[in-house]
Length: 455
Image 1 (cartoon, rainbow, N blue to C red):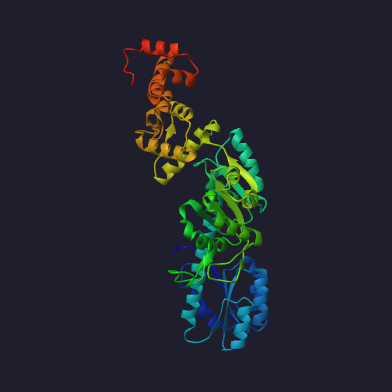
Image 2 (cartoon, rainbow, N blue to C red):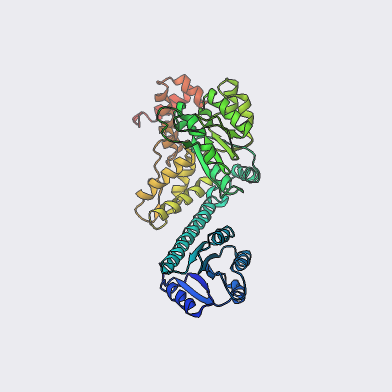
């Protein structure tokens, strides 16, 4: 604990000796600031100081303890009140606890230890509540649109416009886009910017669950529902109750499970395996896929009725190569986050590194960019990331060629060489693909006959 006075406790006791004894007991904790009062009227006047805890003598000369408790709670609902009484009156104690008292203590030899134990428990709970509040604010800040989803391109401006609408209602949301475009990040941003932000966000990757376990995973099961079900388990829908459930890779769900999901969404209730009692659910549904669900419907691989039920408001995330200079903004954000996490001084992207990033199509999208940048940070010797530190692990040979600075004659030769190798030296085919004549190919190769054709 710190040495500063973090908690304020009011002692309300009309017996002067007992009042001093309680004050002495509480001041043993250096974290506590104690003020004493001898009647109800004075403590009511001081409630604007917002004490954390009040120890309240049940029988004061000017006001009944029950009435004073009600007034304290009406003015400061968060203030905990510990009733202290000479009498062990069970019915009175129960009634006071119902009215909001934290505890009811008897004036006996155990009073000091019980009182300190109560105060310490209240302080611990206060620490926990503050920690939860801090983490909640941190999560909200992390998933604030301006912090979590980076982009100034026209394509992303359209995404932001739809995102605002997705947060403002309970409509189902579908997120589509290539792998690595950040679909789960968008789903979290929707949740943490909606009225459900203080409730659970449950993400389920349908591709990661064996098909025979999907139903029990989503809807839960009772003890003994099947071999190995040794205890009752909540499903993901019930875990997400009052919050948001995110079903990623929804296209991986087989047809029989699709029909069960459709029923759950229609009835707004789930029945765990082994139970005959349906349970009501209230959760926002967000789904994501990199597949074309409409095409899957046409191929009879996805139910049409489920398709219309889940698509709701669609947010399509563009691939990174369609987002112009967003690549640089995202790269710089990745640098900041990686350097902070690894306690490193933030490194700068040199102009040649930026140019190299902008020439690459990033088939792995944002996920690939993040990986490339993290490697570049580690490889960079100083505080500047240069082009040579940018390595595209999954780039094909042709992409590597065009990211380097060469003459047009060199580009022509290397591109033609790569395409010939790819197509078994079939010059007419390569000429057609590159939209040039066969004569041009012969001419380029002849000019570079001294160069190794596999260079």
